[in-house]
Amino acid sequence: MRHPELLIPAGSLPVLKVAVHYGADAVYIGGEAFGLREKAVNFTFDQMKEGIDFAHNAGAKVYVTANIFAHNEDLREAESFLREVASLKPDGVLISDPGMFMAARRYCPGIPIHISTQANTTNYASCLFWRDMGAERVVLARELTLEEIKEIRRHLPDGFELEAFVHGAMCVSYSGRCLLSNYLAGRDANHGACTHPCRWKYAVVEETRPGEYMPIEENERGTFVFNSKDLCMINHLPDLYAAGIDSFKVEGRMKTALYVAVCARTYRIAMDEYSRDPKLYERRLPWYMEQISSCTFRHFTTGFFYGKPGSEGIFYEGNTYVQNYTYLGTSEGSDRSGRILMVQKNKFAVGETVEVMKTDGRNIEAVVRSIYADDGSPMESAPHASQLLHVELEAVSEPAPGREPIAEPYDIIRRKGGR
Image (cartoon, helix red, strand yellow):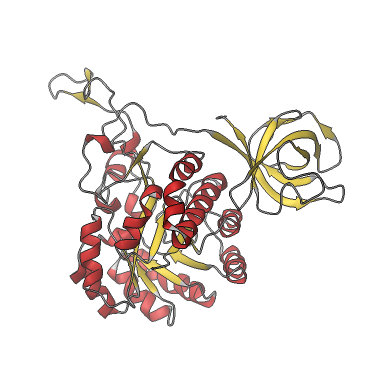
C-alpha cells in the first residue's frame, strides 16, 4: 500500500507549528511576495527559517509557494527572493509560471520544484513535459476524475510525484485561473489578491432598464449561483490511494489554526487507520465526518473525482460558513502555577465549558475556573483578541487529575457553537 503524504496549509508561523503538532507530514507556506494568498499573514524570511527548522526537527517538510503568474517587474525581483528561499533549504518550491520556473531552476539549485495546480495540468503528456524540464512533482488540476488520475499515474515513472487537493474550498474558475476579481474589484486573483467574487450575491440587470435588479433563482433556493461547496474526501481514502496520488493536499492558507488542527488531525488519524486496518477505517467513517465538520465549511462535495459536478456541487442558499465551534486560542504551555498560557482569539468567560483538542483524537472537556491577565490581575471574561492569558482549566472528562497536562503546547482550545 502507498503511504501518501498529508500536506497541510499554514498562513503564519503559529499555524505551521499547529499543523505539524497535529500530524502533517508536510506544510506549504508563502513568503511576503510571489504567492497566491496576498491576504494571508504569510512569512518573513526569519519566520520562514524558524518554521522550516521547527518542521525539520519534527520530521516534517516545508514547501514554499512562488506560484503567481509573473509580470515583467516580478521577474526583476524574483532572483533575490528565490536566492533567499534557497538559502533556507525548504523541501520544495511551488511554481506555475514558466518564467518563474526557469528562475527557480537558476536560483534554487538542489531545491525540488513542484508545479502548482495553477498550471492546469490535466494530462500525462504535460506531466512528462514538466518532468523533462526538471520538476519533481505536479499538483494536478482539480478538474480531474480519479480515473483520469489513474491513467496519468500509469504513464509516469514511480519517482515522479503526483499531488492532489482532497479537502477545502473549491474555485468555480478553471484551476483557479479567475478574471472576475480583477474585472469587478481591480484585484488580480492570479497575483494573489482575489476578492472571492464567486461568493457574492448576483442579480440580472437588463441593458435598457438600468437600476432594475431581477433576482437569479434556481428552483427558488437562492441566488448564490457561483458558490461551490467545499471539497471533502475523508470518507473516500481507498479510492485516493488506488489512484496513485503521492500527496493529499488540504486547501486553506487563509484559514485559522482551528481549521488546520481539525483537518490535520482527522486526516492523519484516518490515513493511519486505513493503512493499518482498512476494516477499522470503514467502521470509523461516521467519526471522521463528525470531526471534520467541527471546523468551518460550506457543506461538502466530492468535486470532480467521480465526474463533473452538477447543481449538487453548488450551495445556493448563502455564502457563509457552517461554524460548529469557536476558536479560543492555542496553548503555549503552562506557567509556574500550572495555568495554561494562551493568546486569546475569541471572547470567553470564567465558568464556561471548553474543549482541548488532543492529537490522538480526544476532545477533553474542561471548565474555565479562572482567567488572569499577564500582569496577574484576575478577569471574569476575556473580551480582547490577541491578549496573553493565564487560564486555569479543570477537566470534567478525561484525563484524571494529575495524570497529564490538560493542554500541552500547540493544543487547540475551542468552544462548541459559533461566535
